[in-house]
Length: 267
Image 1 (cartoon, helix red, strand yellow):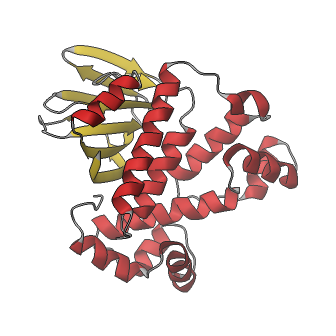
Image 2 (cartoon, rainbow, N blue to C red):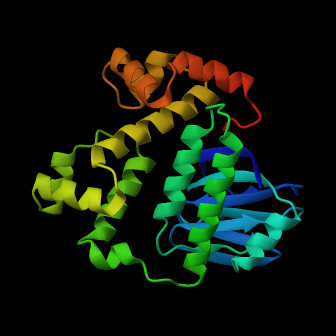
């Protein structure tokens, strides 16, 4: 299956009605949403996904006054891809509430980070990432037990913190303040966070800021200094150094690539 477009961290305060498209779409919602598919309305309170078939008309709107946040992947799927989805027992055009969105969220972030790297194996990376996402959705549909919730203390609290970090990357996040709010020591917080997600809290804070910075560079004409400040950086030089270290190019180079590579660039 070929990924033709990715848009991340979309935000809307009003209803969204998609035009009938020849492409398939994967919609990942980070906030409560109300869906209308084929005249049927469904409300989901948690994080959710929907794999949309080509030629279908659907709409969705926020379930609260806070608006709606979602990611979208546009796909070209052939008959073999569709058979693969069917073999995973994933229904098309059906919103699915997720008991644990860790894998899906992580893979979408990886795809978003990788999208501007015109590597030899980019298409393979995108396809394999989508297959991992579909496996995670299938496991959710089959109600497999979420092992992390059972084995890691205070997993739900940690997951809520991680979601907030990616939802609000411009916030000044401090591991010391978070651990204090949780009533645990900072070293214990670090051990729990690393056990739960395989990365440190600081790594997630950096990644959330750089993802947000990438979106601003792709979708606005804000200056590099303004992007750095908006993403919570006090120093332009530190922002540019960190961006190049993690993205492999400077913010200016990234913006130029986004303009020239519009086929996969997120808006």
